[in-house]
Length: 437
Image (cartoon, rainbow, N blue to C red; front, side, top):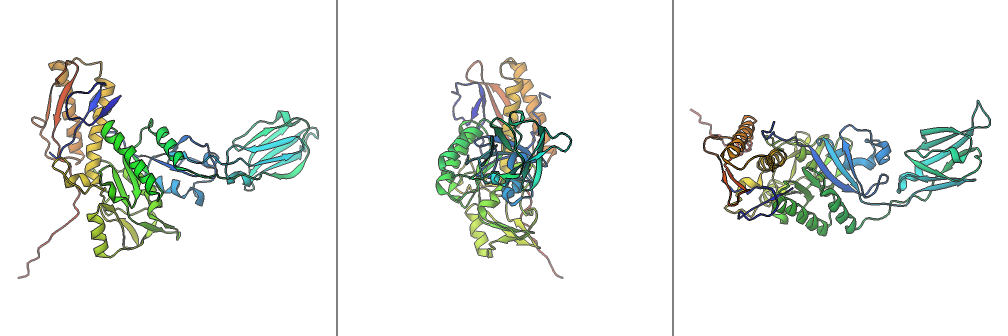
């Protein structure tokens, strides 16, 4: 289904075209919480989008428990996000081992395969059978009792091949597994793969300037041309000057002593942004499990960063907190003023866009007559939805009598709607006058 920005009523594809300016079948406020990220990994299906829910066991999928240092960024993203759409950029080389007629090959490429060992023992109850065990870092993950090699079944960690008899061994270590390298073409493949999935934010935990530009262009196309309101989180890229891009200036120190760079901190920022509702701001929210900002900045440096549209962490009461929940938009226009630089405001507008589009596609396109009754139904349900947002304190001063108009479009199959909303921002500055008598 098509969608996106419009300036004239001349679209060809059926869809929902929404233009924001500074001014049941009922649309429901959609749930947020899905973040996506592409990483080089030591294990896992390559070139594949893997959906990971917060709390899911991931050892077989990613090769390690969630607490392992190899999954640091996965863990950071899921501190706030409900779902991570993870893409493994690298393919790597599979570790292998041979013993007699038996060959064991790691399920995936990567150095994690070098931690696999195959043990073959004579079965204690039947000497004609063998117990074949797969161990990962010394922990048994699979055991089979078989008569010969042909009877072995592949498991989540290794593929078996070969024919003939088994011979006992205390352990066959797999070797020569390698992670391989990652190129910018691999990132292009990721963007192509993720485009067909639904998500709210995307993290780019890399410092490559070319990649920042490519990812930004991707997000601009989805937001402006296709009506998919997502946000990108990168490090040190205020030049984007766009409400769809958040630029993280610095990192944090975690309670275990780990120092995260700004690039690594994009995982948490993207996850937290995805999880935040249209009535929430991240301003002065603490980075989970943090004890400090890294590096710290002076007052003048922080002010300069905010004016440049940078997302900054500051130290406060033994934690790292978000100074202000802003994006990179600084080149304000009459259509996009300063409120558009606030991510809470963008979440409100994006929610309206995404929720209207989803409901219109599901219940109206091709199903409801384009006459006064059909348009009145749509207007009524827009009012109900926006009243819900007002009840959530996401918008304010909404007048259902005057703030939504729905009329026939310029063609028999089109509808023109105007919606006026005033997003609610959070209190961030308190100016106090104290009189002393």
